[in-house]
Length: 312
Picture (tube, rainbow, N blue to C red):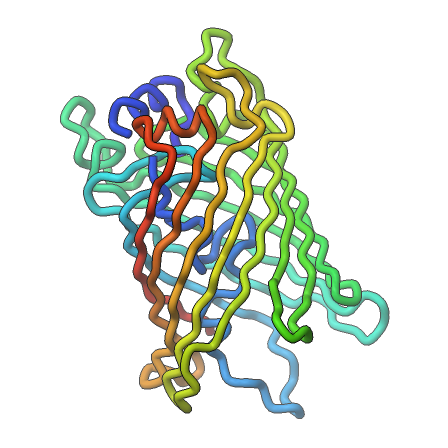
């Protein structure tokens, strides 16, 4: 993510798309959006007598047409590749009101061959644009899953300044319903640095507070015994509770709305102790005024993606 005013000027001149890099495209991301990747969904059911799994490793790599972080433009030129890895540890499991406690830690990256990475003619820099390090704890109380998440957003090639963020996450397990929506809400507080880089304002802007609400229903498309197709339809709304989307038009409340369609299929021929999947699709983002400016004046941004994930 571009965090400096200079970076924001470059973004406006070039124009940030998400790959949707998907910071929510079924990848393991620090906002907890990917604890359930397509690969995880494709895992076979555990034997009833088998002990609960204590450690879960999730990893993957995607190729995206653009990268927008919560609607804030980062890159849409050249090759954009966000590899990721996550370790989840079950530290408690019980039958009472508190059903489980899980710790997660991991890294999410974004590699760019465009102007924000190795393709910048004016500044010599590496392709390693972003590296996000995170740790989280999630509790399950009944069907509710409250949690806390700390993330350090860094730029190995110094394209933006480091941002430290603390977030509260609340999800609801409605998997037993006729049509599960997998709803989740996030409130994130910037502790140091700013995702919008201060919005290019002369006074540097203010640290912001971000709110997100999303759902991710999954629809079966085929019932093949080895290669069943499924379609995830993620939808997310990103808002500023305080100074998160700053810019020329002031501090916007509305940041973006994202609606996507992601098709996934398990790679059964590769499965053993691990579960692999192939996924791909498109997200379409509708942007607020300041985010539209960073996106070269375009209100709507489609982002295409394809990738492979594995759960062990």
